[in-house]
Amino acid sequence: MRGQVLKLLLFLNVFFLGSLLVLTIWCSMEKEYEKPCFNLQQSTVSRSLRRERSNQFIDFCSQVSQTEEPNNEPLSEPIKEKPEKMADKKQAAMQCKDCSKDKSEKIPDKKEAAKQRKLCQDCRKKITEMLQPYSKPWKRQEEKHEELRVKLNLKVRGYEKAIITQKNTLVGSKLAADGDKKMTIFEVKSEHFDTFLKESPFANKTYSSCAVVGNAGILANSSCGKHIDSAEFIIRCNLPPLNGYEKHVGVKTDLVSANPSILLQKYDSLLGSRRKFMENLCQYGSSMILFPAFSYVKNVALCMRAFHTIQDFGSPMQPIYFNPEYLADLDTFWRSQGWKAVRLSSGMIVTSMALELCDTVDLYGFWPFDLHPQTFKELTNHYYDDIRGRSGFHAMPEEFKLLLQLHSEGILRLHLGECE
View 1: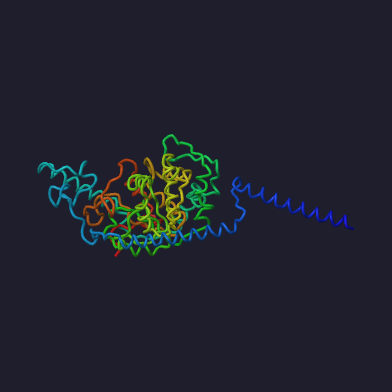
View 2: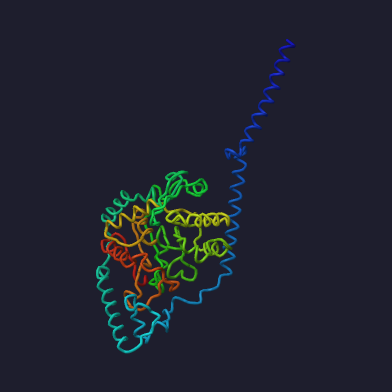
């Protein structure tokens, strides 16, 4: 009897020591498998840290709004004429892109001025002729919209493919950069994969109404803000300023695209201070921010920096990436519809997404010409500045003709001019 008790005690000691050894080995493997021993406790700490960072970012944005300088150029006043662009007021009112090769050149004599006026009259005539379909009352054609929607879903599958996710793009996947001429192949690594959403934010979703907001100068003095904000889902292009322009462009944002060239030019590629970049993101609240990170291999690292910057500041914005395969398929689709250019613009790409995701699509700020379509007054390039992009990269007039065709067919609605 005594011997059995001793054996039992010995067995229990061995079992206890063995358990300690197994636990020690398990914890030593923590780094290798990246699975902490105390997941519940650490996940609670992680959530608490995210909440704390989010609160800090809200305070950060609150301070930004209090220190912002007011916009000193109210849009309620007409855009001032630029003296270097005109020989007299009549000529300035009728200028457009086709009127002169260089707007900064002064008209040297009366013969040249007369020639210039004739050219501008031709511009007005061309605009008037082009907009004849727009002059007819617009009526939504649900069947035609659904037909295009089905085609897009079959050919480009935006619901599944538009956004890169951990579900559709695994570690080791090969992505063909759709913007690079040589279609450079990029391999997805774990550090990229970790920044992807688990699944598409648009999976099995349909929005009743969507507003796609471009940045054309036609939005200045448009009073379209309330109309834009009334949509269920609002998409904006290329990080446009909203503060000071609320009456004309609205304030709500659900998705905003961000061209890497903006990060390069305005924020020094996020290699220095990132504060200005994050200050400007405050105006978009908790919207998604969409980067074409993998369209050009040179932009991958830059977009990754933007992702980590947004996370480091605790911003509630959700960075997402265009799938280059989707963009390539979309390019092929619109070329089959007669469109021709080097590359689709951001506005045309997000409009295509909206046509697939939304029951109704309204477009604001899409007008590629220098003259207002109704008043023929001169417009700035954007509603917030007159900076011109590279010519020849996007075929904006050709894209507009395509959008105008979709408008005339009742598939989407273009808003040109004032909303009130």
